[in-house]
Amino acid sequence: MSAEEDPVVTYEVRDSIAIIRLNRPRYRNAQNSAVTYALDAAFVQATNDDAVSVIVLGGNGDHFCAGHDIGTPGRDIDQSFERKAVIWWDHVGAEGVDSRFARESEVYLGMCRRWREIPKPVIAMVQGACIAGGLMLAWSCDFIVASDDAFFQDPVVRMGIPGVEYFAHPWVTNPRAAKEMLYTGDRMPAQRAHELGMVNHVVPRDQLEQHTFDLAARIAQMPRLGLALSKKAVNQAEDLQGMRAGMDSVFGLHHAAHAHNAEVGGDSLGGVGVTSIRKASEKP
Image (cartoon, rainbow, N blue to C red):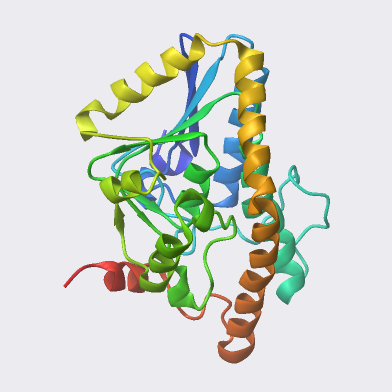
């Protein structure tokens, strides 16, 4: 099977742990719609399997996820998929805000909210780059275990856009750290993310899998319902602190920025691509 024919997400079960991995290493696991729906199918499979107690989300290759696919041959923004997260019309055939709002409500914000409510514990196992859309995947998990060479970054302000769709920045860090992350677009090292409380554990890369699986095995010994109710309790507390309402308000700003870019420059991404973001992010 060629790289183009490989499944975009892999799934396996070891003992009571389901291991789900993004599988586009050639493109640093950039997330297109095919990846989104393959992830969703894997999460549903793990949730419905009584033999699975804990889910681990990772990425094959050197990086966890470089974000939304905005430039690979597999970019599929004009393809239809069966909608799972929200009840809305298909974005294909629509134009402007009508299309962007429909797609991003489903594929990005809606799916991450859906995955946040998975009743089983989900651990993000992060190495290398965790950028923009990759943050959304990691933030929808309960824990983040990172390698010591991992970094976290939301550079989309360079596009004139106030952060990614699943806008959890002030809750997973704090307001001032969130502003610095957005205003600079800089890479946040794993250790700094740990100091801010965004990451649970930082370990050498060669110990990442073992540490994550050991943690998952410990959690798997706990009662299933107790874990599910504890997860719901913490999620509800976050939402009572304004996280869900905050995301709703910022999602409107996000689309105002897209619309401004399209109106002024003819490109909803502000003419900014992967290469320019990467170059701007590299320290001199």
